[in-house]
Length: 125
Image (cartoon, rainbow, N blue to C red; front, top):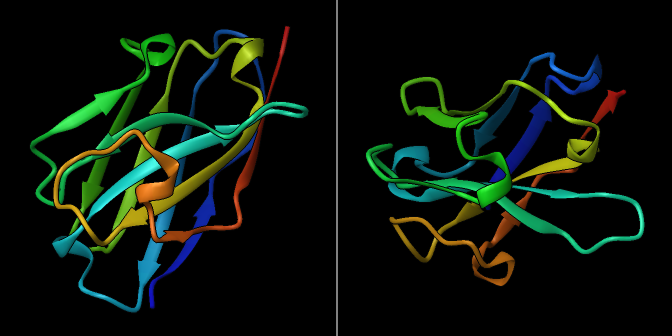
């Protein structure tokens, strides 16, 4: 079992920044890959970013490349998503997820085993 709790969401103006955190517990955090996904109202959950177990491999969806940065601190059992130059289209509930089957990145939601409850990010224009 892995428990994941997101924090750091909120309301921000376009062009602003937020840093999301995801605290993990229950299993050895450094042994599995992690990802961030988001879901806007009326839309499917979509991949945002992923990071390997060691943090050396990262992957991003095209719409956030150059603006978002995923990172992890295995000593603190915490995953991060630094979001800069935010746009109204980034508005969504953001979820962190744990992929216990792979140590490298994956963009597929069905490859992730555990999910947090999400944190709301709202970007006003």
